[in-house]
Length: 133
Image (cartoon, rainbow, N blue to C red; front, side, top):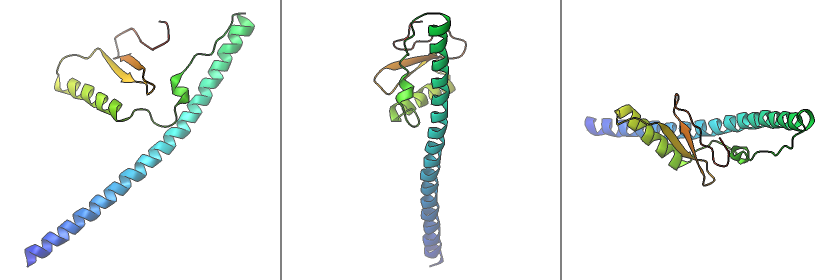
C-alpha cells in the first residue's frame, strides 16, 4: 500500500509540475512576444527616421531622385521565424556542433516566399532579394 500511495503522490506531483511548467511557457512566450512588438515598433520608428534623412539628403543636398526601398520586415508584426525557420536553424546548429563539415552561409525564408542568404562571419557577399550588391 505504501508503494501505491507513493506512486499516486509522485504522479500527482509530476502532473502538477508539468501543468505549472506549461503555464509558465505560455506566459513567458506571451511576455516575449509583447516585448518583441514594443522593440520592433521602436526599431521601425528609427528606421523610418533614417529613411526620411536619406530622402532629404538625396533630394535637397544631392539633387537626386529618391525611391523608398521595400523593406519586407517593415510589414512584419511579431517575432520572425515560424516552425520551418526554427527547424532550419536547428539543422544548421546541429551540423556545426557535430562537426559535420563547414557551413559557409545560412539561408532563411523571409516569410514572404523569398529567401535570404546570410553569410557566417568572415565570409563576404550578402544576398538580399531585390537589392543590387
